[in-house]
Amino acid sequence: MNFSGLTNAELLSFGQDLDSILAPLSETIAPVYNPFQNALSRYAEIAVSAIEKQVAQQQTEALAGADDTRDGLFRGVKYLVQAYLLHPNEAKREAAAEIEKSVAKVGWNLHRESYDEQSALMRTLLSELENKHAERLALLGMTEYVAELKARQTGFDSLRQEQLEHQAEMESISSMTAERGSLEQACKDLLEILPGYYRMTGDEALGTALPKISELINRKR
Image (cartoon, rainbow, N blue to C red; front, side):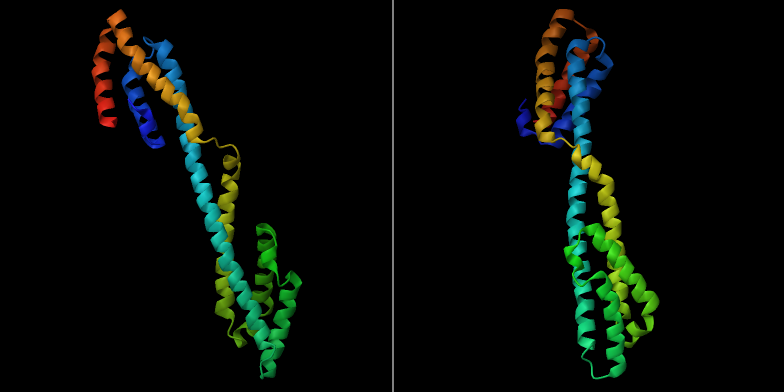
């Protein structure tokens, strides 16, 4: 059987199907079964880790996208405030000036901060805008805009938390491709030895299992 033609998932599936056939014979064929079973167990663990790694990578990409959206909306706040500072209506100029003071406390260049530092500063700013400048935001027609910025910040926080929960797993993950060699070899050893083992022992249960193994191989080719 050409194992190199199988994907990682197909190799795992083949190993698990083979194990289901041979597990009842594990004591009889222990010398060749045990190395195979150990390799299969390790590979299954790696498969789970690989899935975790893929999820973590997807989360990283989603987080970067959420950060870009958040940064864009924050720049929009900056541009709106700066524009209203030049508005002909005095009340709107004064409202913009007060909002500008709050933004200046956290800085106009939040996008240059780390994810977590930016989030902490953004939450501080949003709280002050909502609690101190609600009427001013309404006067400038910025209420919905700031609400959208808050929603994006909340979404970013959720993604960041998910990423942190997977971070430790990402650091300890091994590659399935690097680990598959041991399982391939264990399968090959098993398939090469079992027919001869049957001829030597005449074990009835093994004789029943061999045609099932042949059928499995034919399905996977």
